[in-house]
Image 1 (tube, helix red, strand yellow):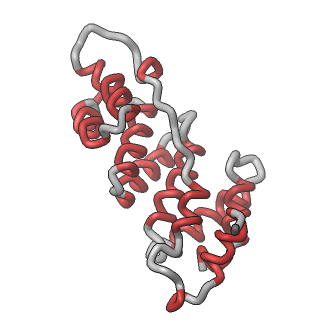
Image 2 (spheres, rainbow, N blue to C red):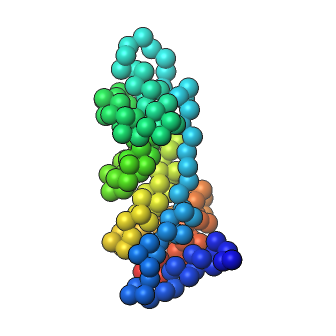
Length: 169
């Protein structure tokens, strides 16, 4: 039996030409953080149908109906607050649309005051990991930035991932 940590090291240390097709599978499992989107947190209660889209989308997401959740999130885009945008990123991720999800999470960099801004950076990381090896340069830069900031809540995780040099080089 191989422990999770040694399996990750094995995945990362094998030469590219000898690695199995899903060589990043263990690494991917180690960086994804599932999120629980409670419909109650998705905006304020109003009479209009549009204001209910985020709550409905959160319920659909929780039930695993990601495509339907995304449809509602697209309809709610004009009034969507940060929590709704964050849910959209997770929904795209679950639909395996990693580049789009990464772009949504990256958009949080433009918000000066968002409770999700730093969480969204880690979400960018797990989207990039799904796109390895092509995303290595972007991943390396982001991990360097995050690990250099001791106040960042994911600084230690970024440093640990960065220490597995073959994952990001």
